[in-house]
Length: 292
Ligand code: GLU
Ligand code: ZN
Image (cartoon, rainbow, N blue to C red; front, top):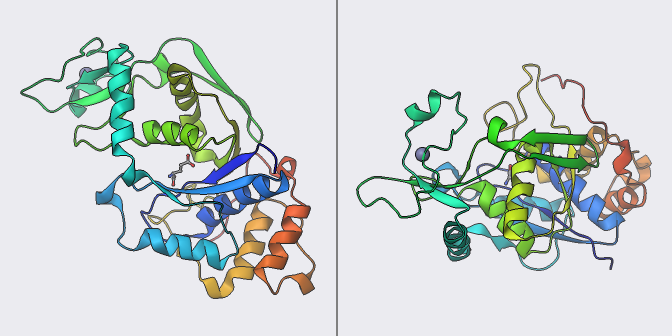
């Protein structure tokens, strides 16, 4: 085993579709090709958006595709106390603050928060409030293994980041950073739709004194409208009966060499071959259009 620890972190808002299989496969192959561990974390942070049964169906689907993870699945729904503690520490350090602004307040600044409630360190008794992380005007950059250099000036381009929403739910941006650190993740391979979130995640890692993993963001499949594959568009759940085909399709999207036909009858054989021939450098930074 090397020191490499990778992960796949699905949200149980729907079943595994080809787009999410690509994310699972890419992170799995990169970990295994580097003699690393591969963990699964269920990002079940937002019950109203979740689909009953999706979490266990996703795990079953991963197993059916031969994508077996190390250790126990980490469930974010079990981690609320930790998230609450981190927010309290940030408030105490004056790095976070309570915010009572409404959506309408935000619209006036094109959705980018202008820091109006900064410094508000006690919870308002009479109004709903969110918690935000105060960002700064430094340029925050990531050197991505697939996308190359990407940077943002958070204060101008993103604004102070929500850590806990007005409805009390913890934000993805907080939970992902806390849990990547908790699980000792060294390498993150995920879809390029999250590249835009990466500078703020690195910023939060620095504020919390965590080390920053290495990132690789593969291009996300889009349909003819340029929409990412998702439940809302035309992505349908993948069928475990087609597991071998699904894996080969996912390999093709990642522009990896395909195993010889005689190896394509079993998921284990496909995966072993794919680990052997894995090349993250072959993943293009952008993909063509998929016809629906
Ligand atoms: N749970 C997130 C999603 O399904 C992915 C989080 C991540 O990989 O950082 O989109
Ligand atoms: Zn505010």
